[in-house]
Length: 161
Image (cartoon, rainbow, N blue to C red; front, top):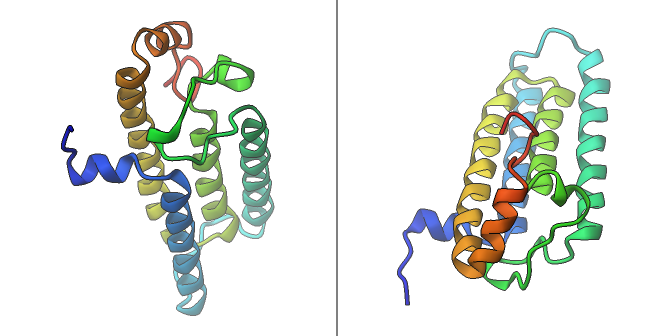
């Protein structure tokens, strides 16, 4: 049995465990920002509406992808097949993209400048999770996943990444 590093084990954990903790931390920072009057971003109250719309878009995107990828919230080791339909035919990680959208939307919507720090860190962690998951799925599904990687070039944003 292959021994994995602590970082590898973390990155391959059940996604809901990671994201629930991340959302909790962002919200706690927002509450602390309100309590201690931390610096706000410059365009409130408009940021509340814009951020709310961005969070709603991210949530709808996440739910849409969930209809296609029924096992999305399972551990990587429990995934039984590759999903290649819906948005997964255009980008490899639309659900992870939806989380990044929600993190940034939550920070913008709340309007506390310091919320962008964990939102940025958690977005970077989400990208690392996607990369690590691709390595795992390539080992698990071999040529089938390799063909998917060749066919769907972009991880999250077409023509960018």
